Image 1 (cartoon, rainbow, N blue to C red):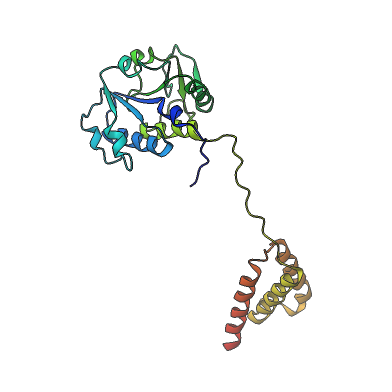
Image 2: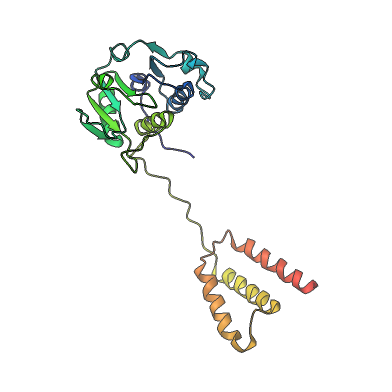
Amino acid sequence: MAATIRIISEDLRSDLRVVLVATRNPLNIGAAARAMANFGFARLRVVNPYDVAFREARSAVGAAALLHSAEQCGSVAEAVADCHLVVGTTSVGHRQLQHSIRRLEYGARLILRNLRHWPVALLFGSEKFGLSNDDLSHCHWLMRIPTVSRELSMNLGQAVALCLYELARDAKAVPARPEKLKSASAGETEQITRLLIDALERSGYVNPVTATSTEEKVRRLVRRLQISGRDAPVLLGMLRQILWKVERQ
């Protein structure tokens, strides 16, 4: 499915650092790298991953180079040292957080605003526990993806993809209007009506006693369908084929 993407300069994209902290499954690191490649972000930093072989993750389809160039850091402090804004992600749950929390769409706008001036780090915690209190202490504020319940959390790869999509999408873009089709002419519509009534009569559907009423109902029905000029010849061809087949029996 095509998506309208905001035209963000290469500098703005390169100034975002996606930081994965204590990721347990290397496939999730690969999925995050794939999402980054799809939306044009290239600076991936990994803090203490559980699996040191994450660079070989098969889930990084089309993002092998990005995954290979990922920076491995020993601490969150090291991973965000060059950033002027650090944003954490959280599912909230039962935790009592000391940070302000912003919804995804509003948080993305603030991140974009800051990216015009300096590097920004976007932190994602481990799949099982999320960001620890120590990790969160490095953050200026938090961002969450709204789910139907505060008790639910998203897969890490999906969360990264959603956040980056929100940064990349153009919220002001007007969706392309569907093509307005020319309607069938009254003559074509009546042709369809007559052939349909003929087929109904030959099939035994029409009761001679109520034939006039049935014809009126069919005529109104055909007009309510608002058949396009492009579809009229197709329907006429179908009905003619049906009548030809009935005559041969």
